[in-house]
Length: 86
Ligand SMILES: [Zn+2]
Image (cartoon, rainbow, N blue to C red; front, side, top):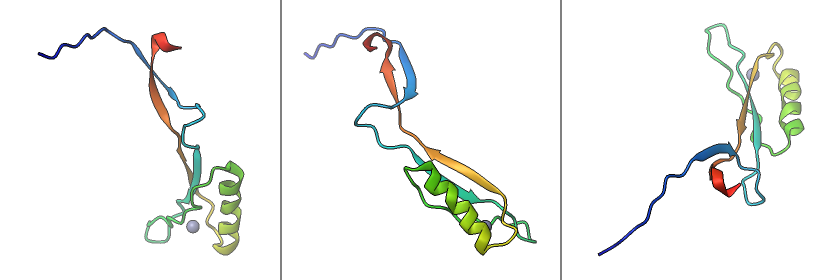
């Protein structure tokens, strides 16, 4: 016979800022549409440094005149923490 003991636990959802958490990654994507309404879709590539991803937009504009619309994508680790463990 297997026995288990359970108790009610309240959880909090929070960004994982612990030392072992994966780094937060930043990416920008060009959303400028062509004459047919299709978005460019070019991406900066993910970077741990916000400024590195940010600078890509200016290089992209230099090489693609009129591409001025972008969206930011952030990948951040989150975790659930039992409330009584804090
Ligand atoms: Zn573009």
